[in-house]
Length: 363
Image 1 (cartoon, rainbow, N blue to C red):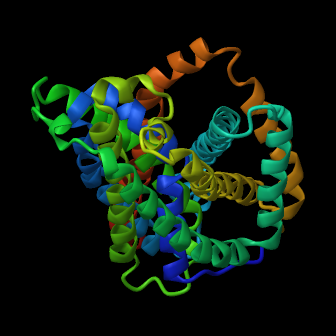
Image 2: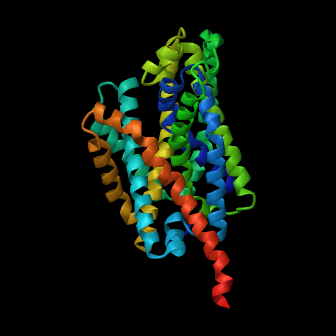
Image 3: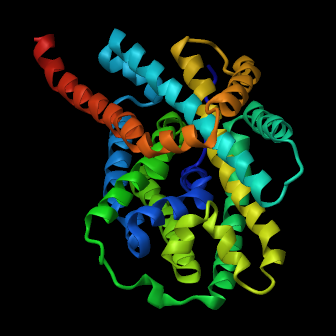
């Protein structure tokens, strides 16, 4: 399969976009409902496991250069690695479907009230499929232009939303103890940190110059965490922890507290859409390239449309109602963390042991 290459700078913008992603809309309420006014601490608790995962993925890439996670899984573990790769492929597919579902729900709840969800599913997948058909290089160039403008827009919205901010709503700190903050931090580590970073196991090997890539990815990761910290803090100081935890999209509710907020709402929607598409398109790309690597196909592009249909069907029918979705959301951390962190750690340990035993076997 022909390899596509991107620069480290483009990789960083893709990472920032995928971490912020749909979490820009969902994370504030999900975090505040657990940790209340201490929710702003949760993003920072996730930085250590996030940096560890980046180190693992960079180390694996150095040991098996030019290979994706799907490829070096079988190189390290042999036949069991093929089955492990299948689990990762399922995770990419399911994660993309959940992101697609969340994106459609956000759009129909905030601005496109009368639009049938099926129409949005179709056009979002069509947009992503077209981007993937153009290739990773084109997508990376596009997002390296879009993400900076989107970040600037997000910061402008942040300033506008803080007009009615009351920073006393952040107090008292740790009044409910440290356990709710740890709980929220673990959830934040699973979503969005772990799921975004593990996607880059399918991207990082295509970076042209890998010198200092670990430090560069870490800086992009910390910046994305800072943006999400600002979003959570905004929801607390404008709405208060109780009201923010009851709002599905507290970021939109925070804007509505300001006079003229209705004018800003379409820009917020555009902001969220760009970030969300960047995450969805990486899930889509990771899945189709991963399947091509697993099946040893010469090209991933014939898989684009069938995979798009899978994303749509799974996104629409994965849950029958909101209760099922809420129940699954409550166990997502337990479901996702072993995949996001356990599999890379297992592969890294096996690769290190294999490299140390190799000289002995040669003797």
